Image 1 (cartoon, rainbow, N blue to C red):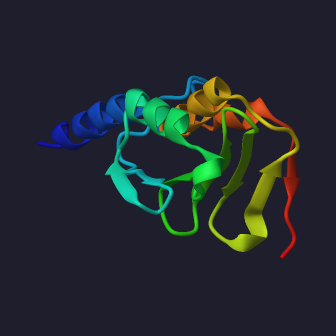
Image 2: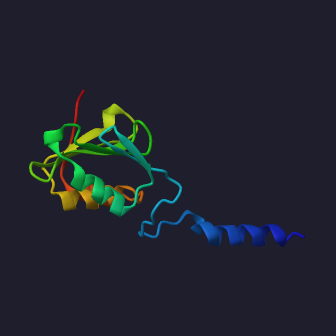
Image 3: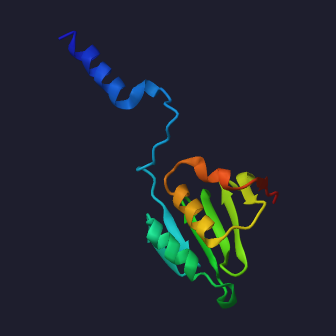
Length: 136
């Protein structure tokens, strides 16, 4: 009987990795994302194809040309623009004191890549630009 608990703990440690960081990020399956398309339509856990379609459909001449991929109301990434004028990109983490804007514009393909990367739960997308903290 005394062996059962240590064995169970050992199996649990193997399953969760003992908290050891391997340096390899894995996509977060527990997070749910909502893609807000210009305030008109919302898509739960969008695929890359859905994100691409939404990005390519943005048109600043028609107004409301923005996308928001949100985890919560205070944690999200957002873009505005279109293929002609380029895209601006901002993100916020937890509160307005952690709201950042990219210091450059992006192409449609770059925006698709960044938004898709964001939905994996891995911070690789942050390498796409230099960021400036916005002060409110």
